[in-house]
Length: 90
Image 1 (cartoon, one colour):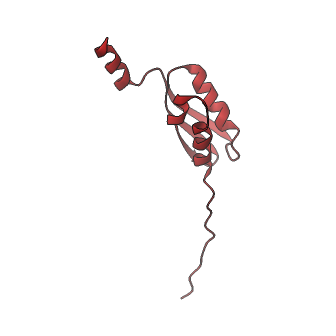
Image 2 (cartoon, rainbow, N blue to C red):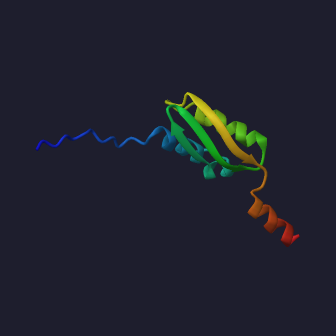
Image 3 (cartoon, one colour):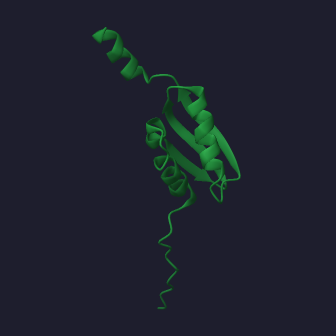
């Protein structure tokens, strides 16, 4: 029996690279976002408080090699659990 070995890459995949770029951003809320990639289409997921941060996230990940298109599934505004907590404390 012959065992084939495939080259193992130590390089992060495109989704990981996109998340790394977001984590390097000075914007705290972008550090929490998640990226999934499938056939060059990157999906952004998570919450940002302002539409401008969603646009910023798109701009950052669009510069990652291997990203051909972006699906923005970001929710704008406070996450429901955070907003509820803020109202109770008021």
